[in-house]
Image (cartoon, rainbow, N blue to C red; front, side):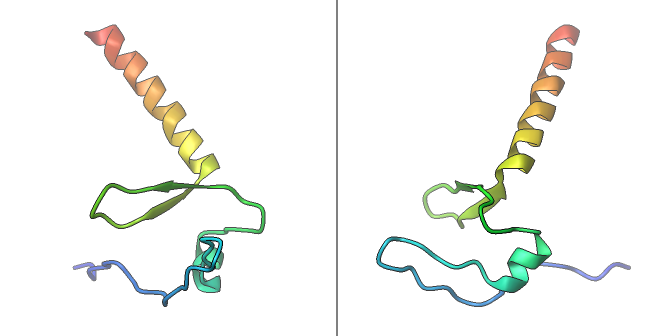
Amino acid sequence: MSKFQGPKVYGAVTVGERGQVVIPAQVRKLYSIKTGDKLIVCSKPGAPIGLIPTEQFNQFLAHMTEMMSKIKKVI
């Protein structure tokens, strides 16, 4: 049986005067986030904030566009 792997807390960050936060080094390393990388910020009211590297987001959109095209052909 596999061990449950729920969310993990990597520490706390402080919002600076300009609204900036520092992503903890352990998270940057885990997700290969480097200086200059662009991230998509997503959320909905009352939900956690998510950060997605733009390249991964673009790949997801391309895949979904391809899948929708295939579905339209079937319909």
